[in-house]
Image (cartoon, rainbow, N blue to C red; front, side, top):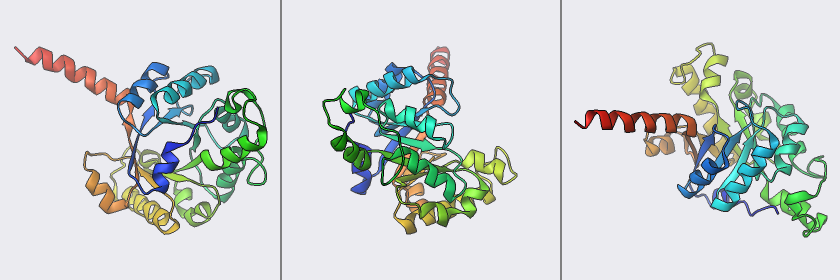
Length: 256
């Protein structure tokens, strides 16, 4: 059954929220992230080889641990969005949104008429029929989130058009892909990329749409002052896990 979206509630109440990108497709790891205290987890279907059945089990794990599960789909195509939401995800993250048409397609694929054209199905999201369809459709409109990623020069140039689309709940930056789009690949700290991030954050503030930043340091206050950020994606579990395991071994070797 579709859960109450605590992430959406917290953002509406102007709370600061923290999330993690899940790159290791294991339900146990999603559960661990939830119990660690994160507010949301992004299950990655863009860069990770994972099937829908595994995503569904990862969503279940998130529900058990009280963390909001979002799914990053490969693109704005309706089929991928439909499958992610039918698995029980409480929102989608759409990469490479470059213009108004991309944003409109994503919103329409995630919502039912009159806000969209998502296909209607039963299953676990309706409690296998224990929630009637009209009630379920109303809950989808209030609980499901659409998060767009701005990670291309075109997306920055078309920000006003993108953010004017009704139904966008949060904007996530993609500084690394932005660096490539601006001709400075692998340099997210380059001034041209930082200027683009400033524009995204400012446009979100003007539109009253939460901006989610990916901090490259542990300075939360710096991001809040610079971007008025209300959401933080604190890296991915794969990188964090590797660094922790390596540090554990190094610490033991050097303890003598």
